[in-house]
Length: 139
Length: 355
Figure (cartoon, each protein chain N blue to C red):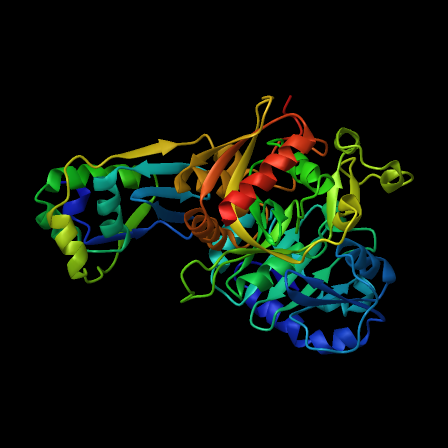
């Protein structure tokens, strides 16, 4: 049995998970490890519904693609972005309408090219000459 | 007092309950302006007060007035030893501590190498800075004194210190983002020496339009510190007058700390309206060129240093960086090699943005 059928809803894994939308592009930052994530339009819509803590079975029913949702949730869990929540929050009508028309194929891509910058310690990971974020032992 | 994630709120409340009594025992004081706020710092010895005054380009203390930020710098002899905070675990895991205390009344920074504390009461905008000895200050404090307190106070007003440079003309200008070595400081220096203004090179206060603002209202950048760090090679590249650096000591990074007014040769503004977010790139091209970039790219350029450089405010700073990335048009700026050409190109760019 997949986790989505056992868990009512999810929440962000902690205050270090922040997400921002730019002209329809969703970017999620994990400030604790420095990874960031890009989602396509369909992924951004599902992320919004999941991160806001709405009932997973309702999301699956609205999209009509429960298996696809379970796989997407599994990826988000694997990346450490969400955790099971004890209760679900009511879904607003406009989000329900949007989920009813959601395109298939949600994707979430992980990037770590900024990780050195985001998790660099500006005190200890600083070369006095070159400045932050060049580590003292960086050639 | 032993500080842990469990006891921190209680320990800090106990310390701040003594604030007025501790302040009464401190003999020296300075009041400076930073980021549009009035900041008062009191200490028992004059060196810290002088450092704060020098870092903010301030004069002597002015008569009593309402202060936006009130900071006490304390040494062990200024306080009952039983009240002195000690971190209660083998290691100080800053990010775990931040996550545990997220959303509370107090923000703090503990630099375990020196046993140095900065604790802020965000309800009263009061700060306590505790150093184990007069010389036991982090090396970077001289360049941006009390920056954590300034940032934490700005957050209570919907603003924040951001790690970026600025250049402007006629009160309008650009925010320059990028990591160390990207050409940000060199661009600011070129601009200052060739007729442009700046409210800061390293940290500036970013003030978003007020909620419910009128269409077209601008983000503003305000001067947080009156000085700029310049390495000797950078000073030579822009023909900085020898009189500005002659006999001046180099800081811990081997750089001069010089007032912006002196570098430019004229008084610098305290506030500018921002018209664009610009990401300088060293390309060694013959001319400076601008290319539009999207808000996502701007955010990913601005956010890493924005969320990392100042402790205990990372989710707020991520939101702040996102807001300015969405609110200002973004451009990549391929830098030419001639400082005068770079400054002229930026002046033309700012004029075009304003029109």
